[in-house]
Amino acid sequence: KNEVEQSPQNLTAQEGEFITINCSYSVGISALHWLQQHPGGGIVSLFMLSSGKKKHGRLIATINIQEKHSSLHITASHPRDSAVYICAVPGGGFGNEKLTFGTGTRLTIIP
Amino acid sequence: EPEVTQTPSHQVTQMGQEVILRCVPISNHLYFYWYRQILGQKVEFLVSFYNNEISEKSEIFDDQFSVERPDGSNFTLKIRSTKLEDSAMYFCASRIEGTTEAFFGQGTRLTVV
Image (cartoon, rainbow over all chains, first blue to last red; front, side, top):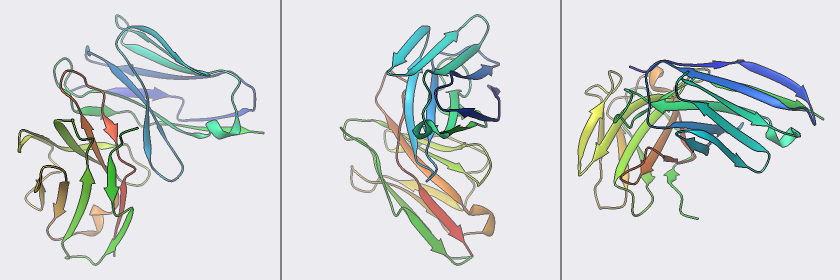
């Protein structure tokens, strides 16, 4: 069973700051997911990555497969980025496609 | 853009009542999931469904729960006799073959009173 840990649990920053959220997992995986949960509760998939780095706008996700670690970065943060960011991995490692979720990082960006 | 849709968005029910949560997955997706999130806790896997049968279920998914794909488009989660502790956000997700990328619905907030 894959164990997923995220840090920090809560993060408050000023608008414009560079944000980093970390995720580590215990069992080798085929891909890692970063998700965003809005205040109303809905979940949106941000990234799925299996190696290296991906970028969408101001969001960048990196993964180090050897170290079983991923980071989500937000550049030039904005109040609309305030949400819970969740890391998720296949639950049983390779070939097990149900997702195991981290506890999430609650991000608050202050104008 | 195709999306997973869930109805209702919020349901309040009395303890002991049956509820059915509905999901319409993306049309060419073959794998379907239900997850739930109790307030303040992490999202947990309930059940996965493929080829018209359950492929995996968690310890949470006991005899009170069932899933069905009644008509080739809807995917439902039924809770036969709701308990207070079933109060949670329930998420449906679907994916195509060959990837773990799942697309999530907006969730149904179930409140059992």
